[in-house]
Image (cartoon, rainbow, N blue to C red):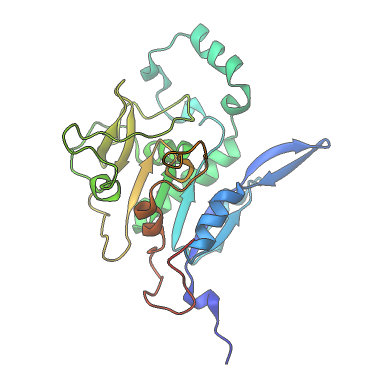
Length: 259
């Protein structure tokens, strides 16, 4: 009897981006992120960046996890942009230098903020990378900072210098979280004070594969040790943790531990 994989495998939602091709808008999702979801035993469900989709999010049920990655800047009206400390002239210079990223997509904002709020309300596993971490913080509100205990120590234990508690990560961003929502706890900081990772301690349950967290850096696009090769899944423990989205059955023959 054929196995119904839609019942066995968890559904992980990921929102598309929009680009212009041959005078028409085209939606796309980075294939590398889709490969990771499939490779670790889940089914990627692409939520199209289409007008009105933010009102239809419940139609994508069941939602076992959400992975939000790159994209344009979040609409400044959705958060207190004055906290940035930049002048209007400095903002314009940043927009000029990063034109493709500093564009605003309000529909994508609405979709992703809706998904982030859904995860926060229902404790659905959520991993926000780069823009996705900023979306999570905006969805929760900016109300202050939390404590200092976190799971990154376990995930990066093989490369962590215990004496100075530092790890080397990449940087693909020009924005970041400055004021962390009260619900979250910071996990790591860049030398300039930028928050590189945070999580919700109340939602973190590694035994059940439950987590809600944001990472400013890209753990899925690290540099392979002793090599010039990039786009390498540098943190295997973190990426394998994605496999444990709620609904994945440990030991199931149809799932693979290796990407």
